[in-house]
Length: 299
Ligand SMILES: [Ca+2]
Ligand SMILES: [Ca+2]
Ligand SMILES: [Ca+2]
Ligand SMILES: [Ca+2]
Image (cartoon, helix red, strand yellow):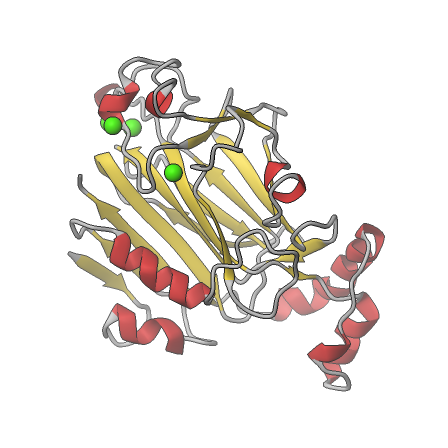
């Protein structure tokens, strides 16, 4: 069942309003349908087609996806694996410099080497592998022009979670390049099943996404009746990472003097300058996420 929360916007079909909410107010979707694939497909369309795979960026259109399932993805995965080895423009980090883990069918199936009860709790959207931070339940996703160290932003990001038992345990926090919060989005519960949440933004660019998986590090038994909710991740989906414009170009863009065709690649130092240049403008903008997607799937 879909539940819509659309402040000041009439309640109409999710599929119809998703592409038409540019500059509109925030919209939330809670979907308890038996299958999240329709919601994921709609989110893919909102991000753009095609799936750009591991092609060097930036590309004009399309999206990137990570499903962790290829054999090349290591069991103990470095945070920069999906920009250095497989070029998809996403770099992961944690507050405590912890490692990341990818499960593996046959050995460590759904993280059963960490806790033998986990296969009874977790499910996959894309079989057979799942993903989790280790020694923490919080990770950050930063974006780069695919295959480079050029910082980038995206217009949308979504992730699939498994075994969300508690309504306030699992979320995505979206930030712009100045670290300003754009949106905090909680995952719907679905014990032993799949939950999907994602958002696209019409006027804002996302510089970082913070993912909170449950309310504990992976390791203990999942025990929501006693407040312990272990959650792990499957697929990530996000729009093509685009380079942050240079400060001078950004200011000119603000006056309409130059067009997007004049945007150039930039360095980290320029990125920092641009952030300062854009702060005043940013504070005046309304935070206006275009479309929010949320669903859960029973399996
Ligand atoms: Ca399972
Ligand atoms: Ca997978
Ligand atoms: Ca559970
Ligand atoms: Ca759980």
